[in-house]
Amino acid sequence: KLGNETLKAELGRAAWKVLHTTMARFPDKPTEDESTALFSYIHLFARLYPCGECAGHFRKILEKFPPQVKSRSSAAVWACYVHNEVNFSLKKPKFDCDHIGDFYKCGCAGEEEEKGK
Ligand code: FAD
Image (cartoon, rainbow, N blue to C red; front, side):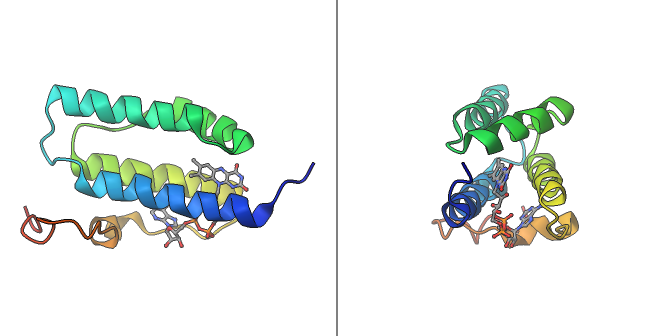
C-alpha cells in the first residue's frame, strides 16, 4: 500500500521543526543529565515516530551517526546533518548547516536575551 504522501510530508515537516527547534534551545553547556535526556529523547523519537518506514530508515542513520549531545551547536549541527541524510535519500536539496544557528526560533520568552551567548 502506498499510504498518503501528503500526510506523511506534513508529519515530517512538523517533526523536523520540533527536532531542530529543540536543538536551538538546548543549553550551550549542558549538564550530564541534560545530555543524557537529549540522547534518550532522540532515540525514543526514532523508536516511536509514527511513520514506521521513516522510523526504520532513521534508526539506521542513528546507528551510523550517533546523536551529538555535548553542546547546543554540536546537537544542532548533528540534527542538520542527519536531516540532510534523509534529504539525500529523498532526492531533496541539501540544507546549508553553517547557518543552522539563526534559523530555528521558538518564540519563547527569553529567546532574544540568549542570542550571542
Ligand atoms: P522537510 O524535509 O520536511 O524540511 C522542512 C524544512 O526544514 C525545509 O523546508 C527547510 O526549511 C528545513 N530544512 C531542510 N533540510 C534541513 C536540514 N538538513 N536541517 C535543518 N533544516 C532543514 N519521508 C519519506 O517519504 N520517507 C522517509 O523515509 C522519511 N523519513 C523521515 C524520517 C524522519 C526522522 C522525519 C522527521 C521525516 C521523514 N520523512 C520521510 C519526511 C521527510 O523528511 C520530509 O519531512 C517530507 O518529505 C516533507 O519534505 P519538505 O520538502 O517539505 O521539507
